[in-house]
Image (tube, rainbow, N blue to C red; front, side):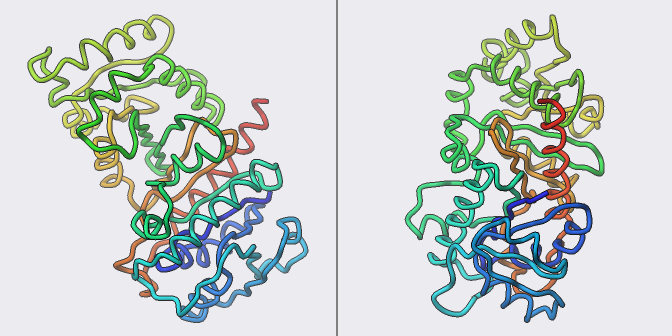
Length: 332
């Protein structure tokens, strides 16, 4: 199975986790093809003394003819000067965006069956002149999907968290939630869990937006006006409950009673998720016509070039991408 891996920011830990993940992923019927910089991979390979070859190719189909200890790379950009681990740089940002774009196009064309993205750096991307604040919105634009959903999955504990809103300012969350078609959001989320994760009848928990889920309207009214009516309607046919106060829900371990927890905003869902599953967590983009996963951590500029980045999350992301691709084929 050909799987496209975008290199991420070459000054972060992306190249390192790609190099260290490749042998394990290659051994489970995955054939990764990296889009990005061959020179950056060579730099980190030599820095860490990893015994692996780097081969430039032009088309993903060429990868099948290479030895198993050789990483195939489609070069979408090379650094103008030396690779500088930990440095925010416009050229690195440009390479990372072009790598994502090309890898996505390969998946849209059906030439690769899934996409795994190494982390990009938002400031480097902005310095390169791109408006994107993250992978999810950019992938939605490339795939012509208005509102893809960001989901986080831990294969060890089974903890699964989806976000109703993604990379927006906290002050904009209430109005965004109020303007969403929440019924459609939950229905599409349920369908994705059935198709991608093979959960026949998902149990969905919904977190409240306000502290204590507003305590009956004392602190805000989004629970009463937006969330509760939708939950009551859907609960007649599906397994969905809430809204729950987020702190007690995670603190008491109540999330273990559900297949997925839906958070209203970024940090509400990701703070507990990363505390509980930082090493093994996976980011999955739902609602796209392609399969896309990534590790749940960032570029790791503070440890880039030190040889201590864990490849576990990236490896798990690749394995999950393969599984979702197989599940989708079985469902179709």
